[in-house]
Length: 315
Ligand SMILES: [Zn+2]
Image (cartoon, rainbow, N blue to C red):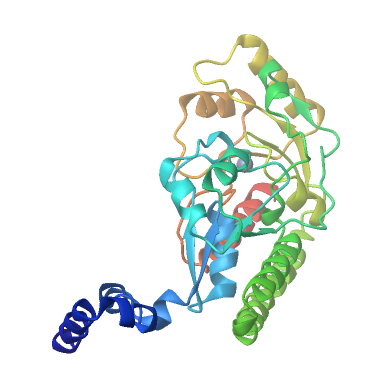
């Protein structure tokens, strides 16, 4: 191979003017990027749940990347130069939408990629603003309210299915060659989402109207779907809880006969622990899936664990 290419180059050098236009692509490039690889559609996704759904639909027929690495906080994320590079060379960008990915506006502008097609996974989903009644116990909570509705639609398996459908249709439009693969992959994942929905329905109907308090306003869609009641979002300040914060939280818990207090997995927060002691409620982890494993099956693993947590807490 190398020998043949060298001889072509040699030939080329001696007949530059006549041969240039008929030459194949430069040998270096052809040798370093095998054809089937370079033809794959390049898809960038914003953060974990959108990556999981896109990867599930794409399987091996497209390359799927993630912009916000698991472990980074998507709500506070600042784009990096590598994110700009990734978008500059991508064919497709998939986002959750509903105002979650505010960092994208400038990133997309800076990437200057006219051939980029965008998929808004939450397209057609009617956003919830607040689940009533919600009581926020800290003034700062106001600043972090979502302007385009609550973005956490992926935590309801039924709306997750809608996101998978939007991603499937967007990938087919951008890359029709692989339509059959996208359809088959999406169908398998949707089947699992349907099963998960049935499991939630069956198991949570034993504990109707279970009320809970959370520290992250991530579960209004899940609560609405399965008849749970998210009665309060307690925004925890970085440094300390004021006595008024604690008193407000205690009042909410009494007023609504709250059964459960949920934090997030992996968070070891002394404030939360002491608040849960004040409230006489067990603090349990509920996963918002904003961080975790990059295997598409992680969605089901984490959601089933959430279901167990809800069943235990709501008894
Ligand atoms: Zn969130």
